[in-house]
Amino acid sequence: MLHAKTGSSGSAGTLNQNTGEANAEAGISSAKSVESIVPSEQQQGPQQQQHEEEDKEEKRSIATSVSRPRWWENKSLEEKPVDGAYGWAVVVSGCFMLMFSMGCVNSYGAYQTYYHLNQFPDEPVSTLSWIGTLQFGVMNIFGIPAGIMCERLDTRLVTFVGGFIMGISLVIASFCDDAVWKLMLTQGIVFSIGASLVFIPATSIPSQWFTERRALAVGVVVAGSGIGGLWLTPATNGMIDSLGTSWALRITGIIVFAVNSAASLFMRNRLSIRSREKIVDFTVFRDIRFDFIFIGAICGTTGYFTPLFNLPTYAAQVVGKSESFSNNLLTIINAASTVGRIGTGQLAPLLGTINTLGLCTLIAALSILVFWLPFETTGTVLTCAIIYGLFCGGLISLLPVVMANLWGVQRISTIIGLLYLANFVGTMVGAPSSGAILDNIGHGKDFKNTITFSGVFMLCSFFFFVLLRFATSRKLFERV
Image 1: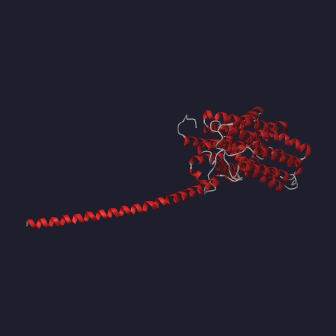
Image 2: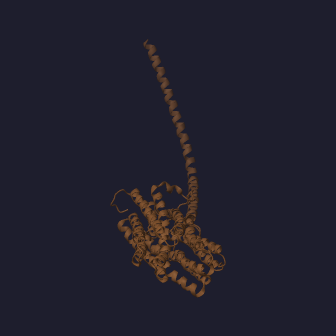
Image 3: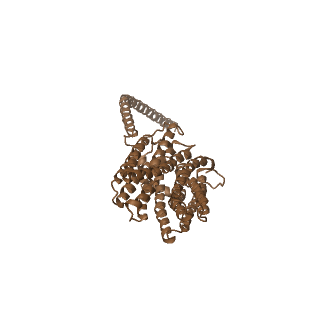
């Protein structure tokens, strides 16, 4: 038994020895294989590194070509500081752009008076007023494509083309004094398309250049429309009286093109905007805050133009003032609006932009319902003109600032374009409805229903801005 055990253990030892030798040989062979592989990898290493460097260089060149915009594409100046000197150059150029784009819209009343009394005496005033209505309405509805162009093209090119379209449309209109529909097409629709390409960049781009003084910057830009209304209206009257409407249109068109061409050199985006699949992003309507702004803007613009269009006529027909006094009322409103748009820009950082917007809308509504509606005196008419002029401009100057504060400045151009779609709806509803109420219910003499129509819609606008304020922050005394 002992001998058997010894034999078996010896066999086991011999087996273990053989196994160890086999393992050792396998290890030696694997080591040799590793040694044979390592040199081949070392030989392939420089080639792989060369290929990798070539790939990196190719990607770097592609990235450089992609990041370098072509001459017509949007260019950024992110190296420029915010609240700096170039930002104020953008503001001044925007002010001049609105001075001639919105200034021409505000001074159309001078042309309408001459058209009605001399060129087209058989045409109803409501038909001639459609030229001015189309100017403002089409300018707003074209805000969406104008905003898209501002994101994808160089804004200097966009504003230059806009100025060219405005200028050439007025020159062509000077040769279309034989038919109202030709003036609707040229002085109304074509002019407003060019004005939109100027108006959208001028009101949206300054927000990219400012943070602390954003409201003031936009207020100065929008004040340009009031300044234009101040001097363009009497200047247009003077040119019409001396030279006629044809030469007045030609001279105005040439000046508009020249001034806008110079101002467009400074209208540049500060931030680069990445491309996206959706041309127009309507998902912003899913935000309840934008819905409140959109409905509030519709209500506000519905009642906005009634004092501008009807207060001078009211002063002449109801109060019994002279024609010169009535015409000066519009100048007073424009002057007060210029001061108010800059003043609300100073007030917004103290109270909050949304708070200031709601306050301006409320005071404008009360000036209509408290001073204009119940009284028929010279003092109350003047008071309404001054107070309304001071605070109605907040509806125009503060909305772009609210949009920039809530949704940032990257997509500000297209978002403002969507907002001006609301202004188009309000304009198309407000001005014709106000005139229809005066003609059909007031028989051209009783203004009370027209005044109530305007004041109530301004109050509705205030109500939706209050909802916007508490949708943004429910803290009662927070500066929002």
